[in-house]
Amino acid sequence: MTREELRVTREELRKELTEALAPVLDAEASTWLAGARERVGGDAGAAAVLLPAVGRRCGRGPLPVRGTLRRGRPASWTVDDAARVVLLLELPCTGEALTARLDDLYRHGDAHERRAVLRSLDALGAEVGGAALPLLHDALRTNDTRLVAAAVGPYGAARLPAPAWRQAVLKCVFTGVPLSVVAGLDDRADAELTRMMTDYARERTAAGRDVPADVARFLEVR
Image (cartoon, rainbow, N blue to C red; front, side, top):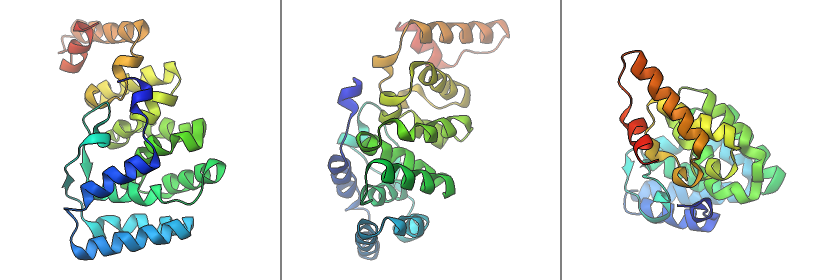
């Protein structure tokens, strides 16, 4: 898919997530999430209190996904992932205020909350522009594969400069994140990335180490 085809709006992602959550949440969890959405919609500051409670109130099991959630790549979602992103999509702000709020939630959140912020950018990117790129750079400096995978989603595909995006793809290889999660890989891959992958494969071979299957397949099709 191209970067344009990967784009999704707040409304589209909210609809996909709420429809996916509906059959897996019990009555108590559904009522809690509805109330939490209303609170965040009326007061952006409530998100800092509600995001940490999502796993306990809504559950942490796997979430079947389809449609928009799979745009451009296989997507692995859990119930708490989806519920946190739904809350973030209710934030009643945009532009600089939205960027500041997301930055605060990311900086003070745990890994689960940080991943939700990164995933919400796929829908909020049009509203924050490139201002949230520092969050992606931070995630890509970690060895947390959950954050690395979230950082190479549609927002990263659309916004990361070419050098940083290539390094992000290599980071996936280094940390064992499958390249299938890299949004827009076919659209953005270029000769320089192929060279970098080739050099990496040669280094592995010279050291007597196996070349990761993802890298071998990547080179075979280019």
